[in-house]
Image (cartoon, rainbow, N blue to C red; front, side):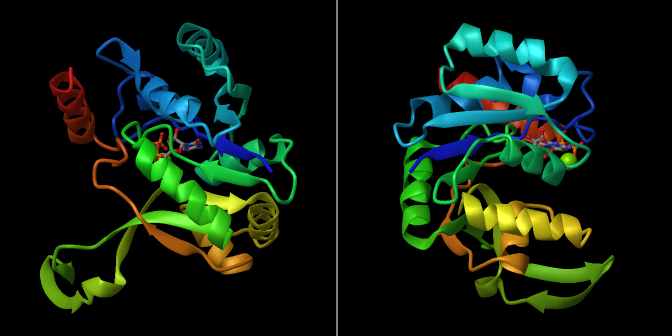
Length: 227
Ligand code: CTP
Ligand code: MG
């Protein structure tokens, strides 16, 4: 039984709009995706890493692989139009078997801790499908300019990655989603809809996704203050 990480990196980073896609920006001399890949390279429970990316960044990814010694990065494959297409392409090329585990983690979440990754893998082995998520802490308003209602925050979570699934279960969900022309914003949504129960594993605030310029600035500050 293998655990294979899929690190989607085929996005263009529209909301940051910095010339190169955000995952390839260098912060303190190191590409954001290299911070992310280091976490998976170092974790003993991870066997292999597959990265879907745009073809024009294959050379850069191979350079990054060589420079940092990412020996587990066994496949760089062409991503798709949307994140779901990129993950599906990686899944089809992963060479995984039904009982292997697939850990999907955004390239743009470079602050995943070893502790959370390890905990998430053990939980996946127990429950087959898990999503890391943060329980809502603030008051949750429904509105459009003015407040119209409030949600019960005890029932609301913010989904993060890693999300880990048995290969066979995730594959079934992705095939059905494609057949039904359904686009989800993450894998947990597809598995929940088409193929099985997804267990929530408490995530970490620090494991935020670099989505906007202020997120990028926050990451820069965290990296510079940690030496
Ligand atoms: N991603 C991908 N393939 C796509 C779109 C996104 O592999 N077609 C990846 C991104 O590279 C990123 C992760 O999915 O690591 C999360 O997506 P997001 O934060 O939305 O990144 P982008 O799509 O690049 O950003 P934006 O939505 O602002 O364009
Ligand atoms: Mg996007």
